[in-house]
Length: 269
Ligand SMILES: NC(=O)c1ccc[n+]([C@@H]2O[C@H](COP(=O)([O-])OP(=O)(O)OC[C@H]3O[C@@H](n4cnc5c(N)ncnc54)[C@H](OP(=O)(O)O)[C@@H]3O)[C@@H](O)[C@H]2O)c1
Image (spheres, rainbow, N blue to C red):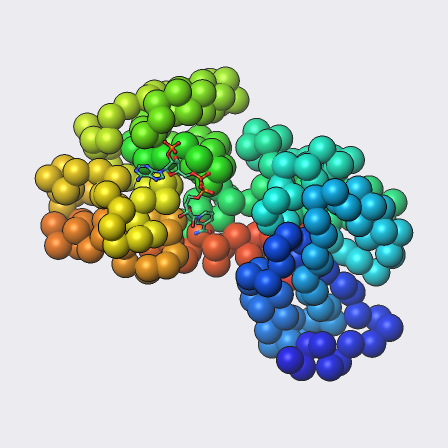
């Protein structure tokens, strides 16, 4: 932990706010990057229970060397309400996963979940612009990804969710924000789509059902996951067996880290 040992009065402080806090990964990701790149910064866990959020934000605002923080459960929605300014994706999603303080100590937030997913796809050579995409799931991550796919200019977006009303609500919201992008609610079937994105949590456990029928997986499809553990979900296993291209869940987080670091101003950008 060289980054913490080398702290001086000039070191900029960043945080990762959560409750509970034990599981947060951002400090373990950011601090080695700071160290390897010689950046004079440190990221610390910031443990704040929901009923102390306002007080904590006031304190962080007053702390002039505190640059900003990654935001995780349960603060993503409430912190957005406390921001002085929120970026477009944050406003569309209705939640922030990073906030920073500007020179006037105004708090600015945004959401990088979806942008991280799209950046991860692009980095692996999977352009989404102009492509027809079937998105499975309309939960928190699915919401962010749907807006980001529309923002990236997908040719068509079909959203399927186990609870249909949530797919309908999300499709309507994406359509309203991106009126030029064709968005529809559909079945869990590719039906002309070239890319299938699983944003459901089905696949975290061996006993989970496949989010799409195995028989519908054909070799012309790209099957994309956002689940990170297991890396090779049952869906990806079946897709590989059928000769599909696959995209792993870790890329979304990897690219989100870069985007959040750039936003916070601690990794350049
Ligand atoms: N790679 C990354 O950086 C990253 C980031 C965030 C999340 N994730 C992963 O994304 C997944 C979803 O997270 P989330 O925050 O969006 O969760 P969430 O808000 O709880 O949403 C869960 C989604 O999965 C669906 N679902 C759950 N069980 C299902 C099943 N058995 N069959 C079909 N659909 C099912 C839900 O459908 P209903 O609406 O019908 O309940 C809902 O659409 C998690 O596995 C999480 O680990 C990855």
